[in-house]
Image (tube, rainbow, N blue to C red; front, side, top):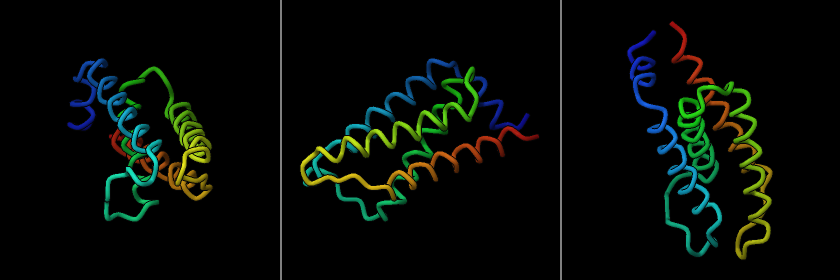
Amino acid sequence: MSPLTNAVARLPRWCWLLLFWCAWCAATAVMLLPASQLPTVNIWDKAEHAGTFAVLMLLAAPAYRHCTLEIIAALLVVYGATIESIQHFIPSRSFSLLDIVADSVGVIAGALLLRRIKQP
């Protein structure tokens, strides 16, 4: 096991759950705000989506150790699609298939990084 894998395994599960749900709540709040209330970040929109979902994947995996990466990834992709669908009904926001693709790319990147970390 790598030193990073050992550090992850040593943290209690409740710490990972707390980190994941805090990140999830913050991401959800930002994704549901009207566009006029969004914080200004000078990063490409698709990179923001991918980065957010990569972080969620990296936090969800140790929080939900009993689930496979495929199940966690599928749930996060469904979550991203759901958020995009809800945005259709928020003034100044819109549904975007490319945002769902960016969310999915972030989930996949996080899962690949997790697999790479777990390898000896």
